[in-house]
Image (cartoon, rainbow, N blue to C red; front, side, top):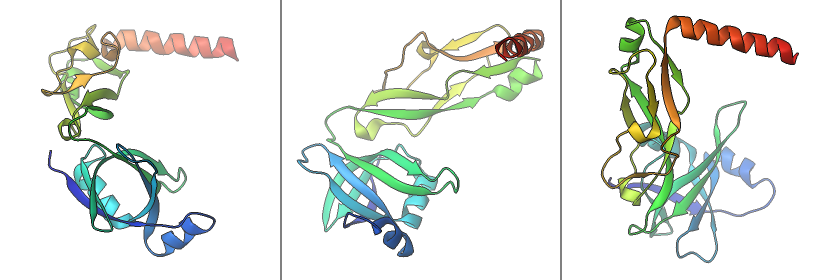
Length: 200
């Protein structure tokens, strides 16, 4: 995976900083991690970050450029305004290119339409996996082909194929997807409804 560059500037801390940055088209950020004694408060251009996320996703290796210095980093956390759906803060974690890190990778399911055409109903239990790999080996997504599943089948974490150099951290026996027959789905819905009534 090729690192994507993003410019950042150092920022002040304290009251009203976030509002002032917003008015200038920036959002607050922070850089911390490998070989750093102190975290660095930063600000990044909001539109530049949005474009980066839309094109490359969250699991992207970054060159965070600050005052001419380049830091290998990944996005560790993004905070969003739950009402407006806008990013309000981002955490960059500095990493070593020679040490494995953990990351959460979304699952992309294929073949759902084929299962439904055969009368099966896909029940999702897991939408992402926690993996461990070198920073440049972290996949943006993991494709899971469900087309061979039949009604009554269950897909577990251990059944998912991941790229070379990537290790899954989650419990291998955790259920990812179950395929229910229509009747099973109806019975399950009725049981959930009865349980809900009992708990009222």
